[in-house]
Image 1 (tube, rainbow, N blue to C red):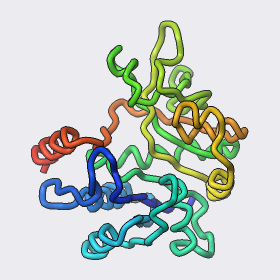
Image 2 (tube, rainbow, N blue to C red):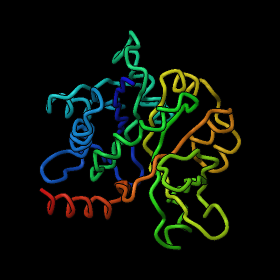
Image 3 (tube, rainbow, N blue to C red):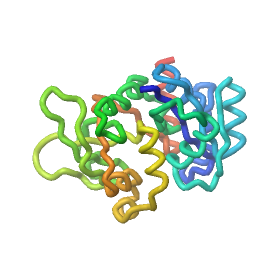
Image 4 (tube, rainbow, N blue to C red):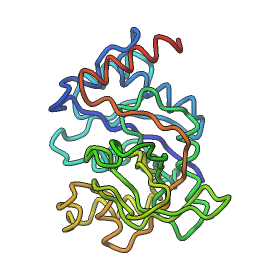
Length: 245
């Protein structure tokens, strides 16, 4: 595999305006994400920007940025649009969609997300971590993945994703971490498909892939990053990263 890491970013966050440029320990959050991508050392890293301010911050840091239509509906669409400039000759057969709000991500997570694609039958790789308590299991902003790992294995097929606590019954439950590794052809197909009924019902775009027969597999991590979505999350990230600096 020859991955390319692309970080979609835009300023129009409803809960935390101007989030990509939020300062964390002296650097904009988008710069921290470039660092996490580079630390994983799986391939080149670029940012697919919806706004010139983000592109300027990336360029000032010596990174590569591509301006995309700010009206694009999702990060996956933004990543796909940027590929026309980043890799017109299609030398990269895997595209990692790294969300721009995981500044505490362990680079090992990026290395893990491509591992499901060692199986040629898998179209998309993603990540899960164990759900630790009932509060997390019943919080709708934490997306759950229905998957079951055989003993000793770290990769399992994803059967469904939901905002509800699934599956029912005793046993481990898994919190989905929204980082994806797409085969290039799978990403092409995914963005060409219309929003699907379950995608719209759950407000989860990965269900579009499952509803159209695409295969997603999950790699498990013991501890995952948290997404920075609110001012409180931002303060938590600042505190954690100040300690580790």
